[in-house]
Each structure stands twice: as structure tokens, then as C-alpha cells.
Amino acid sequence: MRYVIIGRDVPNSLAQRLAARPDHLARLTALRDAGRLVMAGPCPAIDAADPGPAGFSGSVIVADFDSLEAARAWADADPYVAAGVYASVEILPFKQVF
Figure (tube, rainbow, N blue to C red):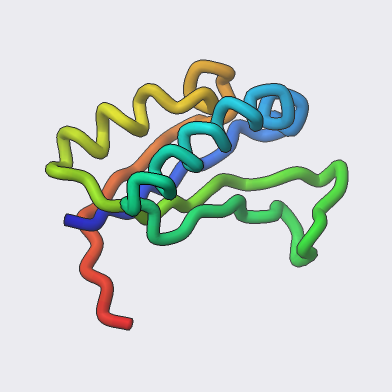
């Protein structure tokens, strides 16, 4: 089943995000290579494709997991969690229509 993972950033966490980004992207690449990643990306903190020093307000990931528990375990192991980038992470079942 598909799940949406919504990570909300701690304010002013751009430096931590950039430091943890290579490991974060490696995990997403592994999901993609396994055919499980639908989409992923950051949410700029301002209305701009490149927010510069304003940074990001969070991230959205949509991917296939065997269960909500499996999605939670994957999200809990994200380098952004370990680096203190995310203030919170919400995981919801997702039904893709289009």
C-alpha cells in the first residue's frame, strides 16, 4: 500500500538538513531503485523553487510499504530525524487516484 510521509522541519534547520542530505537521498534512491518510490521532495519555506537561506518547511514522500508500521519504521530511521531536522513526522495511508 502507498503511504504519504510528511516531515515538518524545525525552524532554522537548513544547516542540519544540508549536512544530512546525502544520506537522506541515498535512502530515497534505494526506495526508487526498488520500484517503491512514487515521489519525494522538499517544501520551500517561501514561494520560490530555490528558497536560499529561507530553507525549507518540510518534506513529502509518497512510497509503497507493506504496512503502516513498516512506513513508520522507515521514516523513524531517516537521517533527517537523527539530525534533528524534523520537528514531527506524520504518516498517512494514501490512495493514488491520478
